[in-house]
Image 1 (cartoon, rainbow, N blue to C red):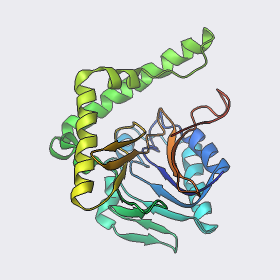
Image 2: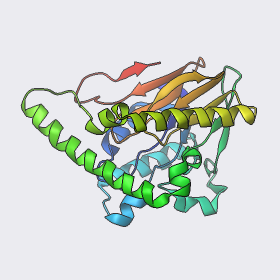
Image 3: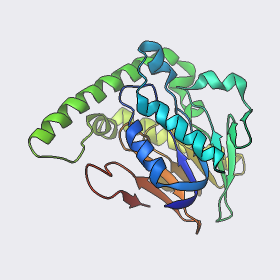
Image 4: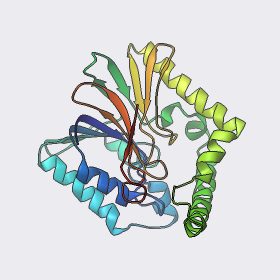
Length: 255
């Protein structure tokens, strides 16, 4: 499938539970004039704890470089997990790869979108980094439980992936309130800056919706949901769920 632009975030290469194989499959079967990587592509926090770098992680990097060589524009906006790149921005790598702290995107619909990972608008990440890192450890523990639960579910004949961590995030009141506040803060910032929309990642929750007149678009992640935000050649915005091309049948496309 060919798109005008693809936006992805939170791949977390270097983390044990990164779905790099599925993302590589997505890159092989989809193309675009431009691909925006909206933060947390490489998980520096996980690498510091324990170095895990599978061949599929290197394959993803190679595939991105290959797409750039073939003419795809690559824009990389670092997040909190790959913040080690921020001291070097803005940075050009060759003719088609640029690393920037934030970006502006003009949609075919005429709207201007502010592109940021989103961690700058997360008070916990910015003011209590140690709390964020403890939370990251807790998230990895839930992912470990996800792996075990889904192993037994497959044994019992339940093949659709189920996420405990996603269930907790969407059910616990404080978590729901945090996500709602995060989305509202980003929308307010975009509005104050004169943008009509915001494109982000960070909270691992893909979504397209309107908040106070601002179009809020979140790419999701490639640890659990395996989602990408895409703008079609006709200017339509969609979320592509690549969750189980091979396990559950065709990829799901939702708006």
